[in-house]
Image (cartoon, rainbow, N blue to C red; front, side):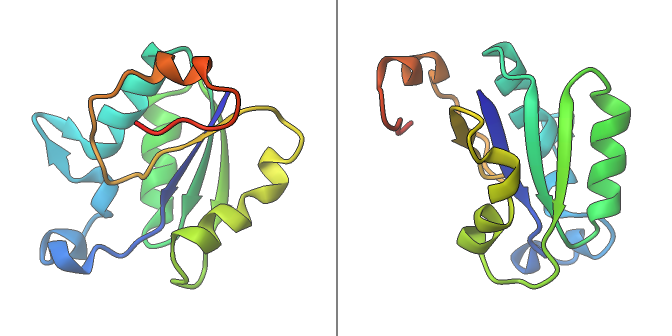
Amino acid sequence: MKAIIPVAGIGTRLRPHTHTQPKALIPIAGKPILAHIIDSLIKTGIQEFVFIIGYMGDKIENYITTQYPDIQTEFVIQTTGRGTGHAIYLAREHIRGKGEILIVLGDTIVDANLESCDENERSCWV
């Protein structure tokens, strides 16, 4: 399974925190939001990730490649703020014909049983 994580947003509602770093890298409970997400996905066995980056995307790419060198990563750049649907659309070439995908928003921490997704043939809501 491959995870798609959109993290291109500007984070205007979190200003002034997002003036110097992207929303996904704001620390919560001792580590960035994105680290909580990636760690939980790795625990479920996911090792392939597509990140849709935009605003301060270089910081996100640097963080991921430095902190998670053992996972397979691809980065897609979203240059215009056209929303989550557009971000997923931009990743289409990286997921076409590649099997199952999981879309996880890069600014949301949830405690979900992702293993239960294997039980459903079409889609999984957590």
